[in-house]
Length: 99
Image (cartoon, rainbow, N blue to C red):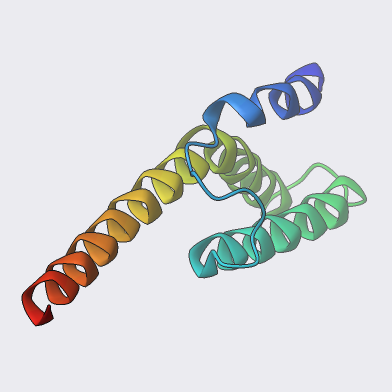
């Protein structure tokens, strides 16, 4: 239980995106809604008796919860940074060839 709370402290360290906030980050918006759905699943699973299939669903949802912070957030940040670099490089090449 402490791990689920302590993992929130590493979020500023694992968010590798240069853009803060999710207004201009469409992939992060999708990831945000996926963690909201996962949170709702975990709340529902917590209210159920510990029997199959609830145990398996809870384990998968818990795995996704931790993977979201440790894998998905850094990957999305790196992917968005790379795509942003490609877009600005392509745009600067177009502008220099026109002038």
